[in-house]
Image (cartoon, rainbow, N blue to C red; front, side, top):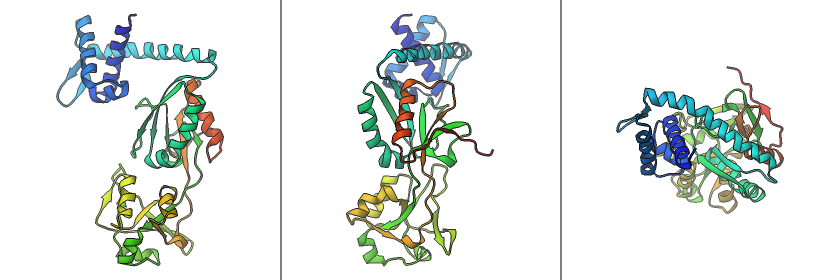
Length: 310
């Protein structure tokens, strides 16, 4: 099979699976225009339209569905054949696609990956940082990082952080203007900047009061869905925020933010896990990443299957 033919077939499969030229172009590292021309060239060569295109959607034709069903196993077999060569290498090679929530990306992943890539220079990593939960199988990711309570059933998980706690923080300037809350209930008189999850829900503000965990209703002039913007709002004196402690530790250490209500902080919550599909054989690059985090992760646990109740 000529190289150009293989590239065209791979391009078609990516577009058909993503149902989008834009998303497929990002996945393949190509421009949308180049990808569109590649697929068009394939259709011209075989004389059959494979994709129906509109201004809003892309979907395989009947012929495209048939070709996709035939090609996917062949391309998987091609990937498996290349992967089998890794057994003969001194160090594994390959490309990893990871989905990571912002806290893990900032707190743990960036410094850890510097050490990992120094140890495995022939491995390349593509990282998608997103707050929303992603189906790593449907998204064709090799692995993801999430809290244990949201990981899908029958995934394999390796803990990579210790338990984490949330902190209530504000800037000295804000506290000089508005005063310091002494009890959780005092927050209802403050401007609280809230974080909205991709589901539409807010991160709950929870506290330990007289041995019981309570959720406090707070309000304010600003709602965000980006952790860095949330912290910036606190730094600029807009209001009080509720954030993972390690995320704001540098600002607490240099005095730009002040920790509040420490005596009412809720108990630490379960940390984050590296998780991946349960299968007989993992690619060598993924196995190297798993072993790296199993040894270096602050959670320090053996891989386990996540089996939550339905």
